[in-house]
Image 1: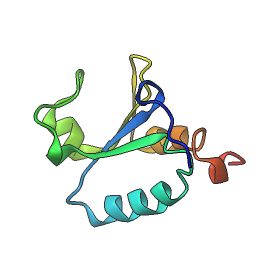
Image 2: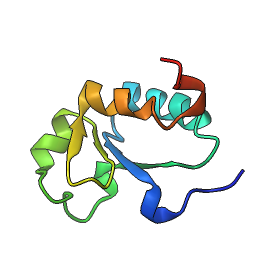
Image 3: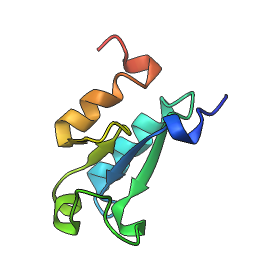
Length: 90
């Protein structure tokens, strides 16, 4: 497996204390054959990513694609289908 360069990796911020979030992360990370996604529980961050607050991160998952916008919740997971090979047909 080859990892995508860090500058091309997307970062998914999720609630590491949420059982559902952890299960979804494990399931999706198994499909990340190319290492395109960095999975980051927001509790491990020193400060929230630019444009987000701790409350935002507590309410929803966010995907940072490096394009100056953040995808929230459902839209974050929908965007993951563009990067995770088994989900591309969706």
